[in-house]
Length: 321
Length: 294
Image (tube, rainbow over all chains, first blue to last red; front, side):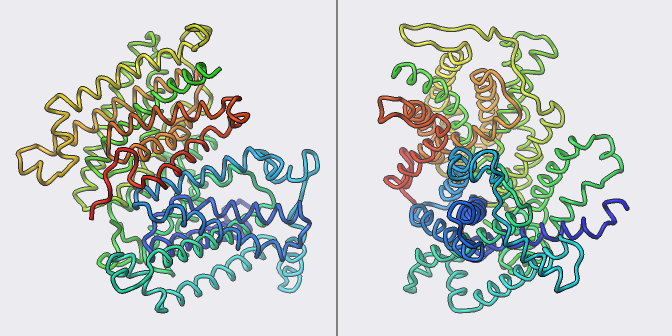
């Protein structure tokens, strides 16, 4: 059977879309609702994944304890970054957050004894040890496959990732309808007006950033479990841009637009592997990887040019500045 | 050792400073943080390598033509991308995102055409300039001399010529400059040309300093360049010059072993960001930037 018709392959695409949904939901909360230009979001994904792996392999913690701790650490890292930088002007904030995500990647690459270095988590307990952080996860997945009568590993993962993603989407959608969510939107629209009403703008932004970072951490956990191995270069700035593209593709300032954007992105990204017709057939497989990324770049530019409100967004409510 | 590190710092600093001025000029006039600037640099470096290695020109004419080609690309993009975007009302966020998309397209196109393998110019790789205790590679020496000359030219251009004055006027207040009779469309085009020239030149110099380079080098330089721009105060061209030199020198000196053992050289980029964040905590508007306007 060819890959394009295989259920496993599309389950895999679905898993990746689910992980990107959770990652991009963080950006939607931070930018779509609170107006924060965080361009270093992938850092929190890295922090979540690495914290869990290190706690399991080095401290011998149970994975079920390490995972929530990793989410907390991601949130705390977001809060710390916010404390230092939230008072900066938006353009400075955007650049400093990219810089932050690159610092995280450099540290992960070079602190071999903590992270396993550039070779990734396989070296977590020393070179030649082949460290594994996902034994408990594999057990859980096998149990789930057994109880749901699923044969495929990726289909089981699909169920878990999307169950969590839908839960988180519902939670964010509910939070935005509370007074807290309305204050966030007020800050997005006019910070000074919100401050004049006695709202502590800084505290609200800090909360949005911490929660967004926690969502990034959760995405990192699933990334770690899905691929059962990762290295610092998996958390390059490109991933942040993918997440931004998903948010804009779906539509800004809307919760349920995020999975729509992620699904379309997954289709473009995975589907373009199978473009066998001209002009794609002129390129060999290595070259097609370049063509694919060019295509993503073109979609970003075309979106900003022709449909800045995304697929589901309303232009009069939210067109980015 | 100290002098050697200082000289290395001036060499990298000149390259960063040249690129940073280009970013800063465009930002000052269009409020556009050009994420594709690093890939403009790569474009310049690869046009030069093609002219130098494949066509057989010597490095000097290759560099001049590559710099001109980068300026032409920069101007072309103003026509087909940036002006249409502004017409459609794209503001800071939209322009920034479009530049990220453009950066992806450019870099992947360069990968597609030139391939991923590292390239070098046909220059004498063993050439060394010795000044007392300091030893500079041919690339470093070239970067310092050409960089210093270009910095002086840009400084004079901005400070003394009519073109420079109108550029600064448009950066200050576009509407007021337009009312005063400045043709803002022409100034914007001119700014892209200058920014492209600087990117192309900085790209060739950076490639010479590194001696061997692949299409990813622009992105790894982009963040130090942004750090220099922010450090100097976004939109301040003189600030970007100072910021670039300062960052180049500070990152090299941070590895000095008499300085509490010195920082591990792999952390040089991290030092640049740490300096940036520390500086912003003290002066949120940058070294030469203006305090926040209401």
